[in-house]
Image (cartoon, rainbow, N blue to C red; front, side, top):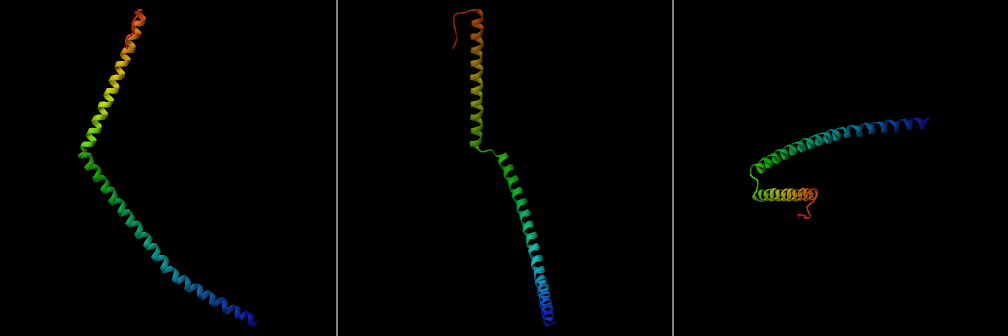
Length: 110
């Protein structure tokens, strides 16, 4: 009987302690949620700033292409033109050689 009373007192004390711990945990939980929300808001604002800066830089770059880029593009166009011209000339020679073979001419153009 005495053991049951002691056990009941311990149980009540533990229940009160648990209640106090839960009450202390609630403000921490709220604070944690607020901090998490603030962090997400700050991250979103930073993302928006980055997007705005990136678009401004893109516009600035698109408006003023640097001379190196222009030279590169010019060289690429020239290189492509040379390649296409060489290809066309070679195909023309192959066609001419095929025509000469058909006619039976003893010569070949290289």
